[in-house]
Length: 186
Image (cartoon, rainbow, N blue to C red):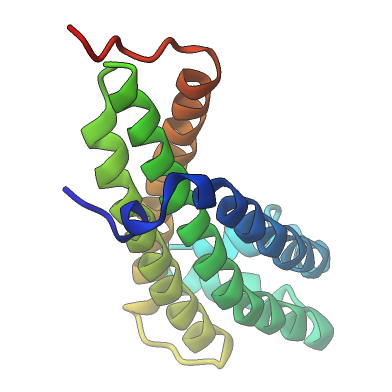
């Protein structure tokens, strides 16, 4: 399974990855700062508690635990997350493609999984965008019973895909850093 990042010459992939990381850090930091005000008894994990609420009653309790300033922070967090999700999804997709190449060159298993997870990171971004749209609906006061479970399932799937992408990226990095390339003559 080919990934669009495979079209980028190998020598240009690492600088692109660092550029994406350079964009992810400040946008992620902005989300973390906004999240501080979102931690309440009803939402001990801030925005993550909201993402995982799962029911209209729980989501409503969380939103009601926030004052007006905290609700603005939540809206800001969800808005900036659209930039963050594009950057982290692309960065992790590229890391997965690079990991797949490193594993393939060393004759190690997992190269196909790495390539598939490259696509999976963009799916994680799409899930994150869907989750954000559902959370915006809840934040605006829409009592549609579909939004909380939709946000929860999108968040859970996103977390799984991102976790798998990070794991494959780290395995690929280790293979690249310490693994021996396979002898091409055999």
